[in-house]
Length: 374
Image 1 (cartoon, rainbow, N blue to C red):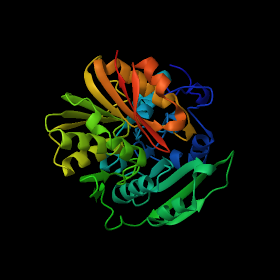
Image 2 (image 1 turned 180 degrees about the vertical axis):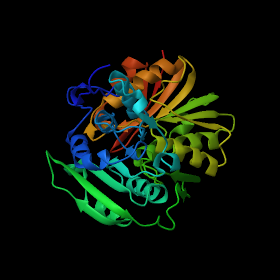
Image 3 (image 1 turned 135 degrees about the vertical axis):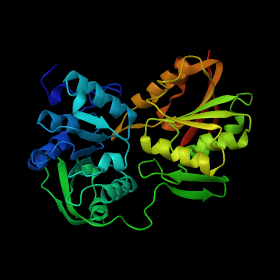
């Protein structure tokens, strides 16, 4: 067991680099602002949501809080919390749970790292209103550059009192209390039918692009007919709301598709999208950190719209890590079809990591390539 220290926290298994950190000023300010409320809570009354790598959950545990409940959308964050907790002998101090009743029931303090999406914030607030104690106080923290007054407006629709504290080291905490009732018509996931694609898209609040189809995915959809037509097993890696998985399964009745994403909101959305499009029996949805649970040389086809951000940082490490996992999981002769912002120039990395890479299409913003595993 090691004595708890913020400086010893790690991001692993997420990408680690000199300019990427496991703790920031918002984590520290959140714990300092809520310190008195945390000390007054009984075991099991504290919930953390959106704790990126465990700083908030483990900071509270190290200060004496016990039986914490934690929800992290990203599987990599959940694994990082577990790794960091083991390092400090705090594995028994918390439980990781899905966003919902078991997580929030009876909570008197909710420590939230503010999501960047207003829809994600709205779904979290809806959950707190439905399940937490009427005496709950929500402490929501973020870096000032990533916060907006519209976030306060979302909080104010559910709480009687919303107060923004003073900034410290470019971080701020908003405190909300006095709960109302969950708003009518706030059921999740939301859904939208895209007539031009013939597809329903369902989305929970934290899913990228919501019920829209982002422009990179939309561009890639135009090339799916070229994706290894004899494949019987495909993977939609980083599936988001499951648009590519459902499109493949709809167009190819013989095809089984694994839709995988590290985001809990994305996985729940992809499941709903597959069901709405009548392909739920052929689209298998899994929450995973990249392709960690998939065996070597097992996939005939992988489709991928990789991220170009790691949290708030623009960083190529996330995409390169996905490419490396694709290289491991693709069978010889298997294909990776991917779309990326053209300025990122991933083609050389794809050729090096996977094999011969050819361009299928390019427009003013995106490039679509197919790489064949050597």
